[in-house]
Amino acid sequence: MSNQRSDQTSKFGWCKNLKDKVNPNDKKMTPSDLAEKCISLVPFDKGDLVLDGFRGKGAFYNKYPNVVKKDWCEIDEDKDFFTYEREVDWLVSNPPYSKIQKVIEHSVKICRKGIALLIGVVNLSPKRIKLLEDNGFRISKVHICNVSGWFSNSVFFVSQKNISPCITYDPKPYAMPDDEMIEYKQKQKKYQEDYYKKNFKGKYKKFMDAMEILQD
Image: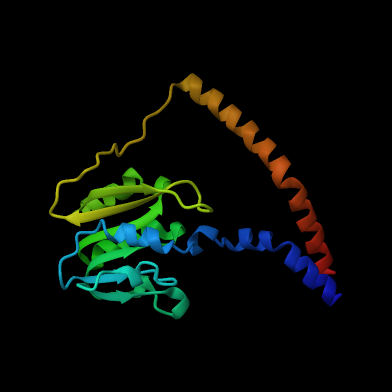
């Protein structure tokens, strides 16, 4: 029975990840040459203290210029960014995509000059730009890039204090006409049902069958 349990647990690991909300986008390591490109867009001053809040294997941390001082956090090494309280001049990093809101909320508290992050392009929302602006940070640069294996395009943005913004946004969403909205919801519901039947229904049934075996 132990061998059967082990085989079933391994086979349905994808379900465990879904259950435990393990986000694969949170463990994407930045290509070294992309980190170098991003860092070149940040207007450091000599002697600035720069924090890599999510060091990983050091793609950003190892590329910071020699003229700055640097510090790091990495949760896998028991240095949690969200408990870091030292003031720094800059945060420059690739944060976990599932925690971007929380990252920005903490960054505005500890950064004196700027915040520069590599995130998914869909994550640079009006709500987050407003959060930055409400705390004195305005976006000065936006660099769009693509990394194979990452979801959609990525964007590296630089936000600074005491500068004019290079980007405008609408904080409120616009609404499509009511008749179009009804039609859209109907089509979206059908699409989701068809997608589920095609991609997950069979896997889910096998998973539930496996759970019954494990509970015997």
